[in-house]
Amino acid sequence: MSGIAAVDVIRAKRDGHTLTDAQIDWVVDAYTRGVVADEQMSALAMAILLRGMTPAEIARWTAAMIASGERLDLSAVSRPTADKHSTGGVGDKITLPLTPLVAACGVAVPQLSGRGLGHTGGTLDKLESIPGWRARLSNEEFIRQLDEIGAVICAAGDGLAPADRKLYALRDVTGTVEAIPLIASSIMSKKIAEGTGALVLDVKVGSGAFMKDLASAQELARTMVRLGKDSGVTTVALLTDMSTPLGLAVGNANEVAESVEVLAGGGPSDVVELTLALAREMLAAAGVDADPEKVLASGAAMDTWKAMIRAQGGDPDATLPHALHTEVLRAESDGVVTAMDAYGIGVAAWRLGAGRARKEDPVSFGAGIQLRVKPGDRVKAGDVLLELRTDEESRIGAARSDAVAAIVIGTDAPASAGLLLDRIA
Ligand code: URA
Image 1 (tube, rainbow, N blue to C red):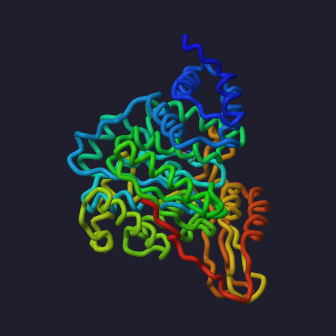
Image 2 (image 1 turned 60 degrees about the vertical axis):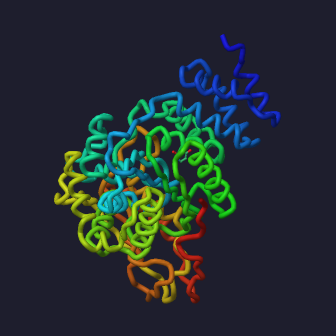
Image 3 (image 1 turned 90 degrees about the vertical axis):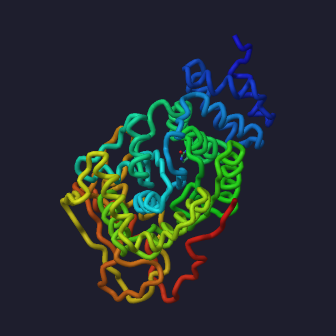
């Protein structure tokens, strides 16, 4: 018996006190074992959201989440390792071209990814639109593929930070996702347990992201960078714009197609710019001197992509799924696209079937939105702004309303702060 009671830990945080190491270790472990009930952890999560945590509390909470499961040992991998984590956005398919690109530059990328929930997509959902591709690998398969090909994108095994899996599902339904200490410890516990040597964080800022303003994104980034460094992981964060979707494709199969365009040397300029910026950071953090732009142009990243997809049973040359219905949205007047709200477009794609409402729901691989214009583009009345794609025609009405509300056509080109907003190291 520890002598600690969950209700005392909840009261302490509710009243603004600092939790002790013993309280944190006990509550995280007891919750994972089912001794602390969901309603008690919900109350504690809400108290943490409202009261915050000191850096020492966040570090201890993260360590307790890591200790709830296994820690992978990547020492058998012959190259240096570097991973990337994005806090999630709309049209954010960067992991897909980035992982094989960085691997082709000589750094192994152990990318343990998740599924989408709500308006942000999930990397595994996108890749599962490739016929045959499988997300689940054993730890042995993961390490072997990482060593041989240098690139793996797969589902995190059940053994990795189980406390986070349980807590994240609870936060999702109790309005406590947005707490910086809980987001930072959730992300970093998984990345530290995964065993990567270096980590580059892409902290999204704007309507399509968790963090709507730069100041809170900076605080989250600083918190995560500190946690990584304190655990011996070289960690850098880029803060990037998520007020507008990334690229032109929002969905699953269409995001894979856009990623393949980037690997083939084309693709939208913002996707290419961010892929290269993150690749440079990952290579520098891993201590490898290579030029990702040259490697991308050489076709080597495409070769690694194909090898990575084949190694997980996928056919990189297969035709990707198409939605059964497509409807276009046209401009009603002449002008300039002054805004395209990432959140609104993300919700519209979700309504079309690209995302899920509950974590058990399936996603439609062909559903989503294909943008034909981006902010700054001039349009004439009648021009196509975007395509709505879905397998169920009944989904189009509501999605169309969200998409209409997300796009503003005005007279003046929008002022843009650019894609890269800050860097925290
Ligand atoms: N992603 C995570 O893995 N955890 C969070 O808390 C938020 C985003």
